[in-house]
Length: 264
Image 1 (cartoon, rainbow, N blue to C red):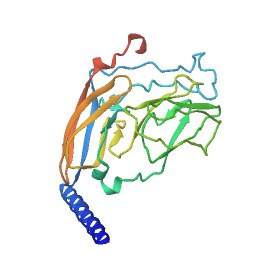
Image 2: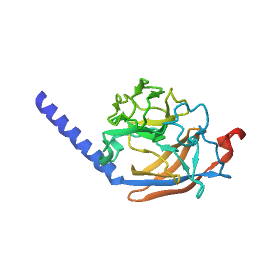
Image 3: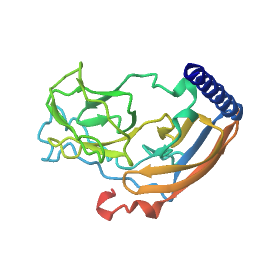
Image 4: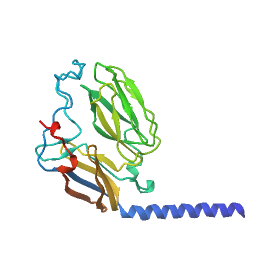
């Protein structure tokens, strides 16, 4: 009698799970796109390090050319802002599109060239491993500043093209975290650690795309390193089989607080 009850309970749970999955799948998935633009006159920032600056003590590596200020990168042709994070803070695991449930890339590469981190901004999922490499002929170090995870601080040898594999992150982070090289203080980058696929970084035109979002109403976070929150609650409605285009999302120039001594 007990065995029959257990079998019935298991069968009922399977049926309910199947109905739930089918009901959710019927709502479908859609894409989100848009462009973050600088609303004002585009400033021309001084380089972080001038090739003639004595602070650049390693001319063979760091002072081959001026090192641009990558804390605010604006396309002068269309005012698109690069390196802006657009993401959901959380989403139900059961709602994630099956094709995105697991990252397609098990590893993501974090590199450095001419004393510049590449990429400057990136998204890392908790099921991915970060491999830190160097294409410079001097040593660097990678120093992370997470809130919930264990911070890392290690040396990367010159011209290490094999790389150092970091431990996977145990949990998501609430905000993009800073990554620094303590040897070369101007080298900074930002990583957003998430436990889902619905996060991205704007490209050189300020554009972003987040594919295969479950249909519904959402609140997205828009974050840029000089400002912090550009928007804590950017609203978007995703419809089945459709692309929701938010168009140009303006970021007021005054919010970036660009100092006079930062401009050419």
